[in-house]
Amino acid sequence: MSDTPTARSWRSMRERCDDAASKDFHKYGARGICVCARWASLAAFIEDMGARPLGTTLDRIDNDGNYEPGNCRWATPREQGRNTRQNVLVTYLGRTQCVTAWAEEVGLEPKTLQYRIRAGWPADRALTTPSLINRKSNHGCATS
Image (tube, rainbow, N blue to C red; front, side, top):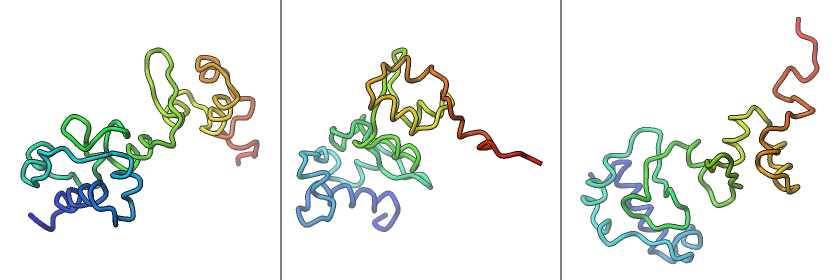
């Protein structure tokens, strides 16, 4: 069990939270992110999280929260990318998502939506105003 993907994820989690010499310690342990006492044991971690599915890594649902049951999941790179501290979150109709997810859902370019939010547009207007430039089309090129 010591050289499985699950065990490697567990060791990496512990290292970035507990080892000040870790290259990622400043993003985790130095910010106060810790591993719950229960997960000092690999067996307890596996009991709570299960084996790591192929194509996933360990993700904290709340990026300011600790590594603990209820705040961790196995996530794909896409899910992880949409759950970082750098993401701008937008709440609309009672749902909160990152700009990229909203842009995909409403058919806008992420950069267009990002510009609107940074310019101070209210969420409803930013998400429902059609773009004057539709870069998702054929870019004005004739098709044959």
